[in-house]
Image (cartoon, rainbow, N blue to C red; front, side, top):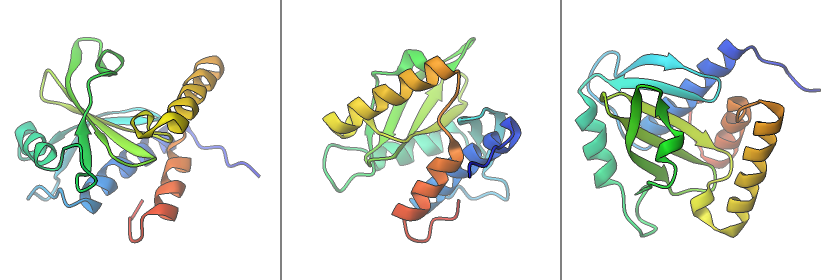
Amino acid sequence: MTTHHTPEEKAQQAARNVFAMLQHLGFAPGAPAPFLITKRCEDRVFFRVSGGWDDLRRWLNAHSGNGPQYDFEKWSAGLKKHGLPNDPAILSWRQRRWRGMQLCLLKSGTWEGDFDRFNPNFGLGPVLLHGLEVLKNWFTKKKTDPFKVAASLRDEIEGIDV
């Protein structure tokens, strides 16, 4: 039986996914409300970091690289597909895992966070699966389901709270 969620429920879950993963990986800005949501969508969240955009950028740079010891890698291939109409993405990082989070820094200092169920940077299989998902979403006018992402995260990462 399939559960149908409202767009608002999906937007709330998309935000929970991004913030839970950041906190799970150790990014914890020191403020009562570390993430200030500026816009929520069904499959992504736009937010500011209470300590300033540079805190997250520095943290991502410290956790980025090409080896298995790194959680993220810089990624620029999809910058044009991210951001807002008057606020383009200028930098991007993609998580180094099968189902990975992507974080984009927008020109205004706002961050965009979303998950791909299949990370195209993870090899040929995920590239093909990601392409099929993008095509399916384009034809059906749907987005990546944040509840399926959350279920995958719970299955794959012990102790994550999504």
